[in-house]
Image 1: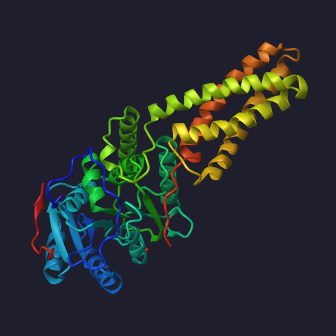
Image 2: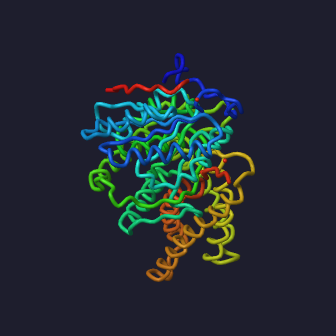
Amino acid sequence: MTSAEPTALTDRLPRRAPLPAQHPDPVLDVVVPVFNEEADLEPCVRRLHAHLRETFPYPFRITVADNASTDGTALVAAWLAAELPEAEWIRLAEKGRGRALHAAWSRSPAPVLAYLDVDLSTDLAALLPLVAPLISGHSDIAIGTRLARGSHVVRGPKREIISRCYNALLRSTLAVGFSDAQCGFKAVRRDVAERLLPLVKDSGWFFDTELLVIAERAGLRIHEVPVDWVDDPDSRVDIVSTALADLRGIARIGRALARGSLPLGGLRRSSGSEPRGNLAVQLVRFAAVGAVSTLGYLLLYAALRRATGSQAANALSLLTCAVVNTAANRRLTFGLRGRAGAMRHQARGMVAFLVGLTLTSSSLVALHHVAPKAAHSTEVAVLVVANLAATLLRFLLFRAWVFAARPGRLGSRPSSHKTGSTTS
């Protein structure tokens, strides 16, 4: 970073605060990473520049990050930097979108850092709503999403399916709460970027996903903006190689989170919420809550069975313990406190309860079909096995859906360097 000596990564981030209304230096630095884009670069930068001049109320900068282009991209970038007072460019010796963003964001003094793709697939009308919550101090990171209500997306079925499958995979494996990891339209506060970028290892297309996963696990606030997005038919992204790299990235970050090897302490806000915790800790706490719940369930079932019959006793016992189990896991396993979202969590927990009820009730039906005169002890043994399976499924539902983070939503010039620089 271009600022003074960085704060130790173990120290907490200060409270979020709005930026001053009067700011003489660039408040926003929009990075445009490019590789062999000599044809599209000029119209992109000029359109972006005109849009910011007309709509953005603060000083701004546009940085072209050239990823080792082999055509005339560097000449176009240098020409634009010489002509437009708010534009500059840097040149990297190696390819990689993540590498370009890391380099450009690391050297920028602007308090809000953003990037967008050179094809301008995302409507620029969403740019001010994207950065407004970062300027106001509401959020730490902001992302455009093509998968939320209010988004309008034009693209072929192949890319639509791939995008939705990828984000579904993230939710099921890493239990993320954000909806769209790969939309090329994001922004971050510089104080967050200073702590976050050293933890992000990927230099390619997985850079976005890794940055968001780490930020969310550290308890940072991620704001989502629905966008209008039109697919670029001339996109040169190799889908197969990118997908394989993403799968390797998911496995790598998943291992790091499970081991608790990421130093997330430096990403916590002084007044922010606690991080969600790693998988191993959550499993232990969930298992402890589950053990107590299972014991309570068996005692309640035994007490009710004579009076109500096996099916009713099973349903009533499971319902009672499900409510208590959801509340206990909310507080102890996932570290959520206060009344905010409690009813929503219980409602979703009830869906998980119905899944468990279906599984355990089906096991009883199957047992009575196979052995109509099964002993009471056999019933209990079958229910224990069925409850263990239901418990595992409920844990997965809790992580991926019931207690998944809900992204917040809002309804909101030093002088530019004119010389190109080379970053290895």
